[in-house]
Every structure is written in C-alpha cells, then in structure tokens.
Image 1 (cartoon, helix red, strand yellow):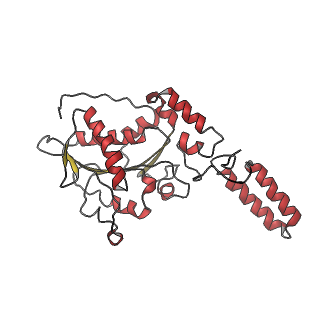
Image 2 (tube, rainbow, N blue to C red):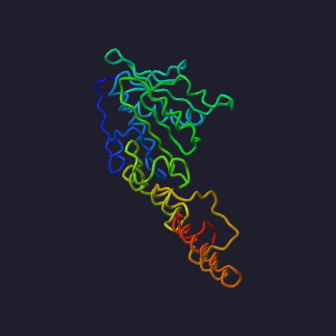
Image 3 (cartoon, rainbow, N blue to C red):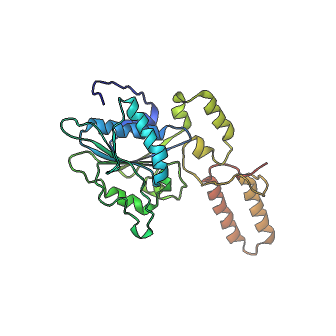
Length: 287
C-alpha cells in the first residue's frame, strides 16, 4: 500500500460528526441507503492507518454475511485507498504493510458459534483496540458485554462501533444507547436517507419515498432512520383504521358494555399512549 497516495472523502451532517467522534462507544443507526456501513468502515480504515500496529475486528454476528457483505465492502475501501492488505487465513485477519516496524491488523469473521455449549468461542483470545459490528440488531444482548471485554490492546485508543438498522424501542440497544445521549461514554446517532442523498441517484431516493410514504408504518425506520415499533408485515385482515378511530371504538365499546367504567377509561388512556409512540398514525394494512 503506497504511503504517498492521497484519498479525500467528504462527509456531511451527522455522518461527518460521527467520523470525528472519539466517544468510546458509538451506536450509528441508519435508514435504508444512509451510508452507515460505508462510513463506519472508513472510520476503521482511518484508525488502522493513523495508528501503526493497532488491531481491529469488523464483521457481523453471522459468519456468512461477514464474508459476503462486510469483507468485500472493507476490501473496496482498502482498494480505493491504495491496495488491499494481505489476508492472513491462519489468524483470519488482514495484515497491513508494516509502518515504523508495526503491523496493523483487522480481524474479520462471524461471532456466532455453531456449538451452543461454547457460545463465546469465537471471542476467546481476541484482544483488540477497536470493534465494528454491522447489523447489530441481530446480536444477542449478552454478546455486547463480551465484546466490551475484548477491547484490551494496550497503547492505543479504544472504540466500539455498532451500526444497526433502527431497532424496536424495546431492543437492548435502545436501553444501552438512549436517544438523549445521557450516558457520557456512549453516543447514539440517527441517520436518514436524506443525510446521504448527495451520494445516491435521485431516482433511488424518489423510489424509496414512494415505497415508504410518511403514513407508512415503516417510514420512521426505513426513511428517517429512527427507532419505533417493529413491523414485520404490512398485510392484515382488519380494515385500515387510524389509531384515533380505533381509540373511539374502544371508548364506545366500553361505554356500552363495560360494568367497570373507570377501568375501561384507564385502558383507553393507555391505548392513547401506545398510539402516540407508534411509528405511524395508521395500522400497517392493505386498503
């Protein structure tokens, strides 16, 4: 890899802030085509280049998509920067050319063990300065603590980076990385498709907005990159009522049939709070 090669990348908005962020733990949640994986991998490459001898691990929970998604994306970035480092099949890592007599390494393999009795076997012996886990919503919560214990290479800055698709508001990521960033050592970012629109074909952005308009149940997560109620299907047999209509139906049913009006009123109030937190003002369904 030629040291004289100069590569200039331009970042804007929250992605630019993320690229400069040295917070020990970062959760970069992003919408469809928001560029979160590319930005995170560039951040890893910058660290590998800036700190000769530093060690990183990059990948996903499963090994298959680590090999088919993460590694090709990382190699593309390395290629743009001057050349792909040597793959070390014994250590399952990229060995970067020595600088100042020090070799930077980037390990890349899945964390999921095939042996249920050796749940953390892929992590045993790993000691790095940086960890980047893509598609973090797939990771079981107990692995998050194990990953933090692997940031133990001395003499280098440590950082843990997650880049999930926006998870359910009840997901463990939501509690570990609250949206108000009240935990000093952790930072939550939310990236919309609009934050990366300058890198995307206009027709792709328009197609995404057409497929997921503001009244769609997945608009908040797929377009805006924000957390919300997890929706896995858009087809229901029920009619397409707005939440306010459903609330009215509940109250009317309670008034007509419930002998415990106070309890029913409390239930309806709880319904209002649930609706207020939903990702859309309508149930996901077909019209």
